[in-house]
Image (cartoon, one colour):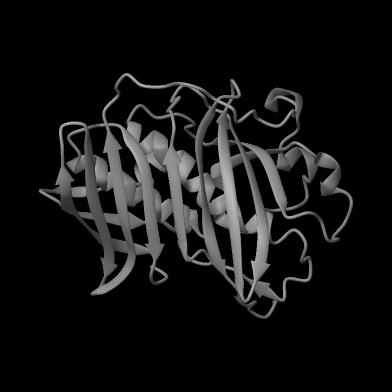
Length: 274
C-alpha cells in the first residue's frame, strides 16, 4: 500500500525538484492522476498564493517508475492570482506538462447549483473487499483507496454493457486527509483523472480497447481537508473517432461540490490478456 503524502514528496529548491514515482500507484504504468498530483504539489512549493484553483495537464509520455525531474517556472505572479508551469521529465523525455493557477480568497458572488446525486452515505455501504472478498485488486493502485460502490448490485450482476457513468465513494489510505492545500487538492485531481476510464468503459465489457488519458483538467472550487470521504461521479457523454470525452465532479462527505473537470481519452488496442 502506498502513502499519498510520502509518495508525492519532492526534493530540491528554486523551481528544480526531483520526485520518485512509486510502483504502489501502478495502473498501466504510474497512474496519471498520481503523476499529476506530484506536479500540483511541486507548483505549491513555488506558489506565493497558497490556494490552488485549477490544473490543466497534458500527458506526453508514459513515465517509468523511479526518479523524475520536476521543473516549475512562474509564468505570471500577480497580487490576486498566479500562473505556474510544471514540466516533468525523465532522461530528457517530457512525461507531463501542466499549468497551475492559484488565486487569493476575495469577496464576490456566491451560489451553488450542483447538487450531489441522492445516494447512500459511505457508512451505510460495504467496501469492495467486503463485497468481493475473493477478488484481489486489478492493480496495486487500488490498494491505496477504500472504495464503496453506491450500487453494489452491479458487483454481482456479471459483465454486461452499462451506461457510461461511474459513481462511488472513496477514501485514501492509510491516511485520508492532508493539511497542505496542494496535497488536498491533489486528492481531487487524482479522482477526476482516474475515474474517467471506469466511466467511459462501462458500455464495452469486451475491452477491445483501452483508453489512456491524453490530458486532465480540474477546477478546485473549495477545499475540505477534514473530509475523509470523497464522492466521485463521472460520465462519458461521447465517444467517437478513437476519442472518449469525460466529465466528472467530486463532492465532500457533507455533499458540497469540491471540484469539477474532465479528460479526453485516446483509444488504443488492448494488450493481450494473460
